[in-house]
Image 1 (cartoon, one colour):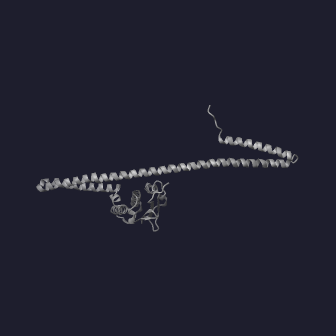
Image 2: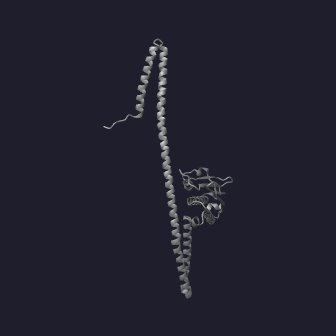
Length: 307
């Protein structure tokens, strides 16, 4: 039969009963032998003795209980910290793999599909030239179809280039963050007609790759939110290095953001921007602008803080 250990509260109750009983009986006998005739004082002392004994035992009981609670709370805090750190490393790894996949797909689209479409366009042009040399009017419909096919190929090439750039801009890897931000601002202007003024400290070109990627993705998501919700006519972007941090500030002159939306857990875009900053040990703030609109500010440390 397995050994059954009494619960802590049972052991404490039994110990209290034994100690309190022995102490009260022993002290009463001593007092009665010293003062046998003073019954009123003896009764008062008995009550006071009981209160003092109970208070002392309660003190030690609570101290032991609170010590256990504090220890359990500390262990829980340490466990949560370890889990949080493991989750942060996992999220960083997942984001790195996702960015690597985007880069690979972007290059394959550009190098393989893009080049294949360009080769197809050249072949169609070669056929068109050969037909035109023959000067046979019966081939005019064929020539027209070839021209239409070339236009379709041009459209496909433009789509491939756009998708490739959306996945991973070449400027981000080849020219650095300043040129990538400016290029994205120009693409935003072409898509939306909204002026995007980008001012970048040239020193921002020499920063770690993960910081470059996070800053660029935050910029992309901010422009997406402006397009969808802000109804802005102008966007101003500032990027520079201050105190070993990359500071990226994006402000617009739109209708502003609802304060309730800033902490809305259903806003995946805002959550994604905060997550990108947090994975690098940085922070991201979103607030209404002084003169209207919305200001997004990201501060990303250039040197990762060790936990």
